[in-house]
Image (cartoon, rainbow, N blue to C red; front, side, top):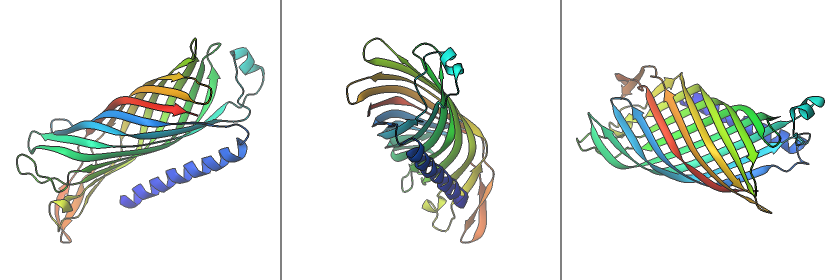
Length: 289
């Protein structure tokens, strides 16, 4: 399963590098838009009726979007339909967040100040459509990889239960819509809605943190979904723009398969990853060049 997660990671990285090379060749005459800044969010992970973890996360994000050279501004559907338009958009997005969360369970007590790290990278391809005189609608699809690292190993709960590290790997396909509408003055307003099709997942529970002879429990996660949305405010300036974007992201992943753990090379127990949900809401603040 670790090998499969590695294959997915290599696939996503290869997709991103290939797309970047194509854009550099075909879109060199049209500069892209680079957005980067800070992200602040509140994160909550829950296995219903079993446990939950929650706390603030802080980090950085970067986004790069490019339109093809033929993607001229279209102000109406009549103009859009009057001739063939190559209104393509390509993008790369990434983020890295970290913070401390608190664990709480009805059966195993609570643990505070657990280090949590979240990394995500996505490659997108889309198409621009005119909606009104000034509004552009962009539909897009892509491939994404999400990694969550929970560092509970070495900690003990209020009921003396030993903690262990956990790693989550998600591979998914985003389907989304974005709008951009200039307002009076230097501001513009945008909306984003997205559905994330869960393609593949691996959950690693490092039980060797509890028993040194135990192997890592590795579970396949084969079904689930995610949704996310945001509202984007952009203030334009001469050389750079200021961006403010409140957002919300949600994941619901179904129960995994059952896998075997060995102790000293001998099968000793079986385990699975329960159905789980996670929600993250916060704000991004950045600049666009």
